[in-house]
Length: 339
Image (cartoon, rainbow, N blue to C red):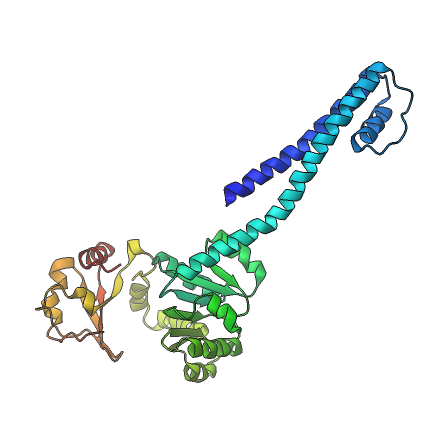
C-alpha cells in the first residue's frame, strides 16, 4: 500500500515539474526569438499555455509563430496530463484510505479468540505493548479519530467508533473474542461497555479499569471478571517499596514483558501431560526437565494454591505457575510446545 502511495506522489511531482519546465522554455524562447522583455515573455507564455485568447504583445514574426504553435500544442498535452494526475491523486487518497480500512477489517475478521482493548490511552497502550510482546492477536477500539495515526504508526489493528454502540463492538469481533479490556477514562463508560460486551458474549473474559473504588462492585455486578484500580495499585506499590523494599525489588525484577526475558509462566495442565502417569506435580518433574520451579497452582474452580505440595493431584482445566530464568522458561515452552 505504501508503494502505491509513493508511486502516485512521484507522478504528482512529475506533473508539477513538467508545466514549470514548459513555462521556463516559453519565457526564454520569447525572450531570445522575439526579443521580448522578461515581463512580456512571461505574459506571452502564460496566455499561450492557458489558451485564454488574449492578443499578442506585439505582432509575431514567422519564427515566433512557429514557436507559439509548438508551445500551445505542448502545453495542452502537458497541462492536461498534469490536471489528470493531480485529480487522480486527490481521488486516490480517499480510495487508498478506504482500501486500507477494508484490508484491516479483513484482518480483524480473521481473528478468533483474540483480545479487544477499548481505549488507547495510557492503560490501553500499555496493555497493547504487553500483548504484542506475547504475540497475541488484539484489536483496539477508539473513538478519537486523531489517535488513528498513532495506531497506524504502531501497526495495530483498530476500529474507530464509540464502543457504546453494539455495531462497533461487533466490528471488532466481540462475539468471537476471548478477552475484553475496557480501559476508558470514565467509569460510567466502562460500566456501559462492560454491560454491552457481556450481553453480546456471555463467555468472554472481561477486565475493566476503574478510577473510583466505589465503581468496583458496580463493574463486577455488570459482568467484569476483574476490575483494576491503577491509582490504588500504584499507591500500594510505592508504599511497599518503603515497607518491604528488598522484596519489591525482587518482584520488579521478575520480568513478564517479552518472550526473551520472561521469568514467570502460567501453563494449562493439559499441555503438560506427556504421559498418562503424570498426575501430580511430582510426576511432571519440571525441575529436572526444564529447571523451572512450580510456585503456584490454580484449580478448576479458579482457586489459587501458593507453593503447592509435590503430591498435589492435577485436575483437568487447572493451571500451574512456574518460576525460572528466561532460558529455563524458554526450554519449558519448547519442550511442551506451549506457545
